[in-house]
Length: 459
Image (tube, rainbow, N blue to C red; front, side):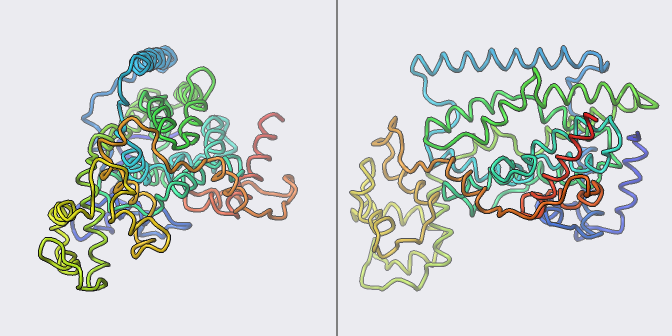
């Protein structure tokens, strides 16, 4: 197995032909170029370069991993106990009347789902390169974890399909423009997906860090459920990432086994630490949650719509001395527009949204603006109008994720299956790629790969 500083430098040298406008590579572009069915050579070179740069950036971060692989089990168990104790304390606080720690309301939670989507939609991608190493037993834990991330070919259990269904069930398919930080983790994972053979130890290390059960996952699932948003995608990760027998345990054991077989265990562990620290880059879960402002979000939503709605309104109605078209010609003035709508009684804050004329225009069937705002945008507007009135209420709008899972399965029609013995695993690898596995051919290929590989493991 190879993973050294020289390997990283070689990867950077191989990517020198590619430069993004003679400047640093941008995470969003790397993400877009690699999250396709078959990235071209330029995209792959860009991914190598980006990955090397991110490793350099992470190199100076503090690392809590023990130097001795034999100490990983105790390290993992200690972390699990710490998280369990913190979650127990959180539950006690909530039982004693403390408010939600993360989400101020349903709109806040949906905003979170949209902003972490670039990472969730490539869930498991960092392990893709492992499926090419199916002959090597050292990669067995990584391969089995990847297959579980892909639902073993079952659309209803494929993590990417699950998250897409979660977004669709809550009207969140189309998100706002996101900052670079929101794409960093996804770009890193896609880089590892396509260059894991050059960065084997880093894949083991990234997997070790990503699969540890964090406190924020437990609290997120709890509060989503409170807000009527099905938490299944998150609770699934709570169960499969457990330290007793789940992905966290498998990740630690995989590092121990691989380090023992490495020609230079110390060099291997150095690569493991590089990969582990990649988890610290980009927008953090708590950072995404803490950046939300309902006031700013409702202004942003209206400003975004203004670009499409200008010149589409009649001029008979004037608000604050201007026609609606005149207001929409200045998207930066949406905060003032909202103030004037309040003064003109088009919006009545602190009361049920249905009492506001503006809400009825966008929500009521037959309303003049019905269909202009998607489910998420309407939730933002609704909560902003009702702020103070709806505090503490279980907010409406829940659509059971169970139906989303059923529909996801229905979208994957049966494909005539080959007998597993007739299928060459190498021939299936391409369909298991991050940009392909959640489509019908990828799901079928995953099922066939999983069946044959698991049978081979017990043979």
